Length: 257
Ligand SMILES: NC(=O)c1ccc[n+]([C@@H]2O[C@H](COP(=O)([O-])OP(=O)(O)OC[C@H]3O[C@@H](n4cnc5c(N)ncnc54)[C@H](OP(=O)(O)O)[C@@H]3O)[C@@H](O)[C@H]2O)c1
Image (tube, rainbow, N blue to C red):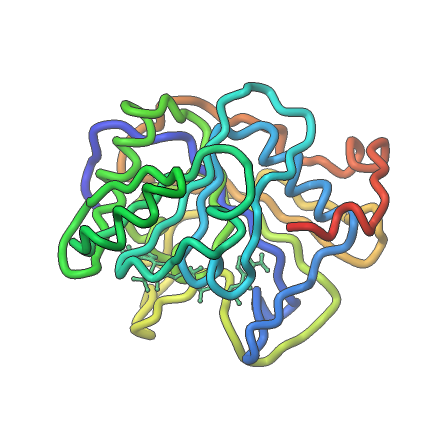
């Protein structure tokens, strides 16, 4: 973990099974109840950028557009794609929406040109497919003015961010399912992970609440072992269930990710 020049206050939000999986062995990941989707959109509304890993974009093809109660017009959709696997047919680049920023560590001028022709802003940060996430955070703050960032996974990106000490809050909604295999909330693709409790990021529980659906639990932890101070403080209250009860959105409208 090394200090970085500047970084946004960063929240990870994931929805998991009771055994901590965000996707099954087939990549299936539709776990959220309608309240949880509202929770996600409130977090997006409070953030100035949402960030996802390349595999999530390729597998789920999300638009990442929907927000509730936006606090600012500033809103970027950020993709972390070490090997530049994303392509211009994805919804993020095909459909109208907030600007897309891509961080990569692959020098492929032709691919970069194609993505930029669809409006993406591509930044080369790192070498050989390994992204310097600290540098990516610095660019988000200094070039785009992003002080509040929401990371929506998947597990590999969550792991990279936590390992570098770039995360301030870890929020997980536990749903009443068990997958027994697949991606975890935090997942080291090299299967090393954090070997002991003393190596684990230090977490402090700031909210634990029953979801208004009655069958899920939302836990919010503050991460105490970060690399360096963020550019902003916490941007949303830890417990949100009471607010969620007052926000009703029809389920079919919600299921556009
Ligand atoms: N339930 C939920 O809350 C939730 C949320 C999000 C996603 N999901 C599910 O999770 C699954 C995908 O998750 P995942 O963990 O496999 O993938 P992921 O985290 O979405 O993406 C992993 C990719 O991100 C890039 N990346 C991440 N950190 C990097 C770094 N430090 N340097 C360079 N590149 C980096 C790499 O791209 P390159 O390969 O291009 O190098 C890596 O392969 C999907 O099934 C999706 O549906 C579930």
